[in-house]
Amino acid sequence: MRLTLSHGFIAAAAFACGLSQAVAADITGAGATFPYPIYAKWAEAYKKATGVGMNYQSIGSGGGIAQIKAKTVDFGASDAPLKAEDLQKEGLLQFPAIIGGVVPIVNLEGIAPGQLRFTGPLLADIYLGKIKNWNDKAIADINPGAKLPADPITVVRRSDGSGTTFLWTDYLSKVSPEWKQKVGASTAVAWPEGVGGKGNEGVAAYVQRIKGSIGYVEYAYAKKNKMSFAGVQNRDGQFVLPDDETFQAAAAGADWKGTPGMGVVLTDQAGKASWPITGASFILMHNKQEKAANGTEVMKFFDWSFKNGAAMASELDYVPIPNVVAKQIADAWKANVKDAGGKALWN
Image (cartoon, rainbow, N blue to C red; front, top):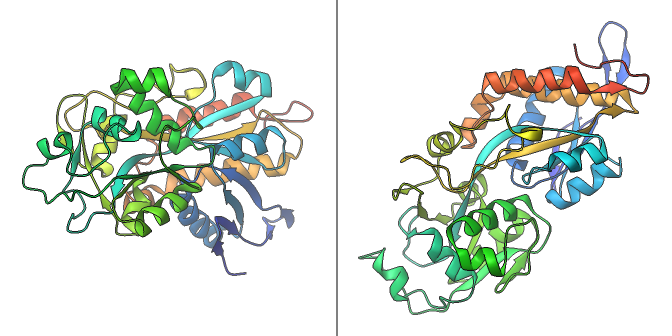
């Protein structure tokens, strides 16, 4: 059966597996839109290599967390890592699957991708509604020579619970005390300003349609849609552009093993080359697998993707999980993921 990508879904047929001819169920997952482009690419390649399909619903991190808690999917996906106490309470295992970056995108005539620059506090002031026009002195001062119109700024943000929003608001909270006090960091916040779009796809679509708009999306969406993304000044004072090298620079010092639930947040990392709005996307699955075959297939899929999907990730400007971290993830599977009788599902 042909792999179909439609409305955020990845679908494929079941297959006869191994010498025993046991039938393996499709993998079902739901959650973050941030990693959807690479999960789609991995799913297609995995289907060709193994015959096993995956059905992933790109509905936002909040929806993914809710569905895995309700046990309606085999795995959930979230860009906002759950805290250790929440994982323990729900009986969940969490691990990072991919690293990427969130980027500001604009719809301004004559502004090419990478031409415009922002600082973190400037982005916060725009999203707070304090800066209302594109030719505001605060924007013009760091963009000398740019042809900035006097047009009003239309802020576009997410309308759904979103890990991309968590990364964006977590970053703004770190660089703007006013943002931290008034809005804070979460998958869903009380926005002071803006038009809401559902998913990275919805935000990208609004920014494409509305002249003078600004939004934030995962970098792959900006590239795919040929949108004008902007550079951002990082913690070391350097203006950098988003790509896999600046994402890797931000992730270089991450302490996955020493962080509870491997829930590392990579925003506002030190380093001259670091992209300041970098983040990992996480997978959530139950420690106790009531459907052992399904749980095993989830681990097989991500194990295959870690070993075979690095080039595909780089093509989309994601950063693949380092081999040493993949080994730590496999160790966590061995120690924690078990069937209803307590038998380990990963060897």
